[in-house]
Length: 302
Image (tube, rainbow, N blue to C red):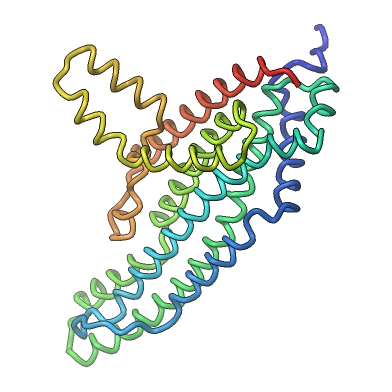
């Protein structure tokens, strides 16, 4: 069997090396430190007692909702900003440092270079979200234990039957750390991966990090309302409308598909089928945008 050519594209080992170098490069650039500190402060602030006007039987419930809402919101903000800004920094910085010329002269296939950059950015986001997730779980578990203790005392003082007390306490446990809550964290990460792929595409034809960041955030904003726009412009227009709607959903990411976090915070179950659908959409967008980035990047002269 003939040995594979050393510069053959989609080489996993080469992509892994590029991803590790990208991860290290971003850590040295300290692109996420201030956001991480902000995230830690916001999540940690939820450990403070907040005044509530709820009934005695619902004491402590609002603080659990607040911890999850603020934590996941902070994770979403952090991951999206990092995805756009960090990815937008990479190619211009490599051109400025002339690192890109050295890499491509080895030769390294441009597709592997782009995939390595994307994997490096998403790895940094993933690691950062793990840290924030652990902090959220710790604070939430502590608060949930306090709420369960308060409910147990209230149930005993109110003379709840054993079965009623068990259901009452299970309601509090369902608001604490659960696997369903972790699926919400995963959805937040997948949304940021899509935006990282968008920023990678923008950076292939832009030499300005500012341009990539501004346009990236504009696409992010449009993505949240894209489904409403498709329904407004293409609803009831027949086959042509369906083609236009499909083209729009490919060109611009439909981020409304990722808007399941609020329902997860409220305790609604995200079914496995829905999570797999979101994962499939994420993979689709990442492949499409990376492939388009490669087509543009392959034509550029350095």
